[in-house]
Image 1 (tube, rainbow, N blue to C red):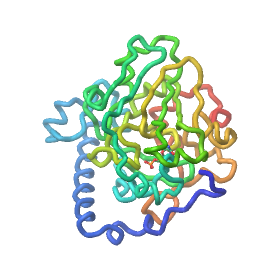
Image 2 (image 1 turned 90 degrees about the horizontal axis):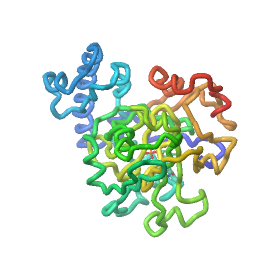
Image 3 (image 1 turned 180 degrees about the vertical axis):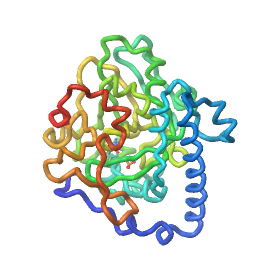
Image 4 (image 1 turned 60 degrees about the vertical axis):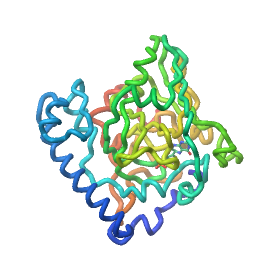
Length: 333
Ligand code: MTE
């Protein structure tokens, strides 16, 4: 994000999967793609029902498939699963932005070493009735993880499709009972330069911080993310717990979270503090609002050769546009 132009994906990223993967990985990916295709088909069927229920999923033979929250509208359920082909695991885990470890996207996976998440705690505090410190077991017990296949769009114009696992952040926030004065949610990444060597440099002000308005944080699409491709989240993608907000640029997806605070005022965010004219608090994906140094009209999907048109709200407008009624989306970048 500090370079003059968005860095192009490496050539390995635009090589067809079949060449890029070794045979074993490729076979696994093929199996996964088949199961995703089958699951997507069933989801399309579920979407025709007025209410998708767990029972419907069970009858459809989806016992081990993602749980569908019956309280959600069919539109929201549809938004949970893009039926686009997921980006290969290898690419998602070897082309990263995680400045706590490296500013080189191809170098993060190699730099995480044996980063350990044992004894991890997440403090949820601020304007809540029940401030709580969760360990990872507590986090897992809040709700069963669902698989969410989301488009992911980085502000640097590369994009991917990712099968994340997790549950709506709302479920965790409900546990601590936000008070009516809480208007925003502030997130903080671990600060420990001995384990995150990038924090010894001053490339950003540490720790990395992010924020959402409370209604954005409570939106069912906003995912407290603990997994990727049905496995635990690898360190380079933000283990053990990160945020994913699929209609916003990727930098809102703060990694390795240790603190979530409910607050009254708009909290500072790392990239906005670094360059306020380039990275806004809202950061909704918007093809009509160019970054001061490059267009946002198109994007480079990892693994593809041509560029695609970028979609307003990254294609999630039907679900989230209502959150911004009356706001000038260009002004509130
Ligand atoms: N979170 C922290 N703590 N540190 C970071 O450097 N980078 C952000 C976001 N979350 C970042 C972070 C940016 S710029 C992007 S695009 C995404 O993480 C990248 O997520 P990925 O590496 O899993 O693709």
